[in-house]
Each structure stands twice: as C-alpha cells, then as structure tokens.
Image 1 (cartoon, one colour):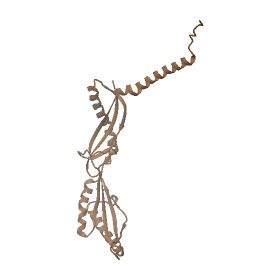
Image 2 (tube, rainbow, N blue to C red):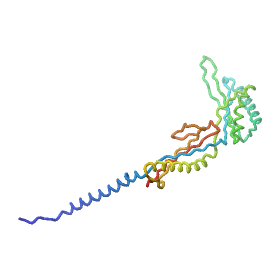
Image 3 (cartoon, one colour):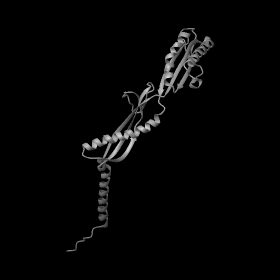
Image 4 (tube, rainbow, N blue to C red):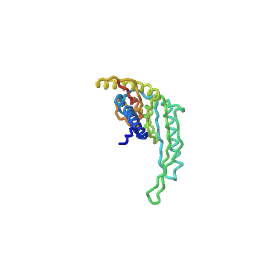
Length: 242
C-alpha cells in the first residue's frame, strides 16, 4: 500500500491563515464600532440668560396715492409730510446721524375704469436707529400725531436688538456643557456607572426669544418684537462611561 502524503498544500494553509486574520480583524472592528459605543453617553445641555435690548430700529413710511396727472402735487405733499416728520424727530431728540431718509419711490396702479387715469403710490421711508431704546419706543407712539397736520405717516416696523449676542453666546456655551455634564452624571449614576471625559461636543443654533417663550426653531430664531429677551443655547455632548 503506497504511503500517505501528510503534507498540506501551501495554498490551503494560506487560505486558512487569511480566514483567521479576517476573523480577528472583524472582531476588533466590531468591538471598536459597537462594543465601545455602549460606553458612551450622549446628552444635550442647555443654558439661558435674560437680556435687555440695547438697540432699536424704527421704520416709518410716508405715502400718497395720486393720479398720473398730479404726480408733481403728490411729490410736494410727501415733501411736506417729511417736513412734519423732521419737526417731530427734533422734538423727540433724534439726531440726523440716527436717521436715514430714502428717496421717493413710485408704484403704479392700473385703473379698472374705462378712460380712468392710472394712479401712483408715492412712498418715502425714514429709518431711525438708536441705542436709546426708550426714546425710539416713545417716538413710535407719537407718529399718529402727524395725522393732525394732514400727514399720512405710518409705522412699518419697530425692532429691538441685543448687540452683545456673540459674547453672550460664548459664555452660555460653557454653562450648557456644565448642564449636560450634570444630566449625564445623573443618568450614569442610575445605571451604576460614572461619567468620564468628553468624547465630543457640538453646539446647536441660538434662540433669541421673548421672556418665557418656548417657540424655538430648528434653524434658530431671533425675536425683534420684545425689549426683554431670553437667549438660549444648546450643546450636544458625549461622555465616556466608566
């Protein structure tokens, strides 16, 4: 009977070695991707601060609607109304550097009447900006007084801003991380673990809201209607567990 060849072909040995190597690598990859993820806790912390607006912007519109044949008269009326407005601004302590007056613009209206004249709306805008919030607020309340003189003037918008938002946001980010750490500590404690170092952190959008408002947006929001505001920031933070 011929002797049995006990030598294993090299190709078979190589194949077995590759299988073992891939199995070991796969095990390490699984542990890195999945097993260690069980040792990470991700929470979102937040921080808020109440602030008072320190900038105000008032937009006033003067307007007249006249037929095309009376455009010159309409322009003279708008000019007269602007004079009344400038007198009011001076009375309220508004300086020229705080005021921007736009040129007169015209919007055409087509007449529905046969043989009727087309009309134009003449508009002139005055924008007043100041760090004196109460002064601008009081001015906005006085605009209706111009109607007594025959002027057609209206408040288009009154907006309030907070100029120190960037600095406030930075200071609130650290407070939000502390809040996230406190929350993570409590969650970890309930599971019999402790939080370790921060693995990652990402800040959310800034929310500038009226006081006591919960009307947040995924894209951030900036309320300009309120003098008293509340700034809120969030931070999504991941902590290691031990």
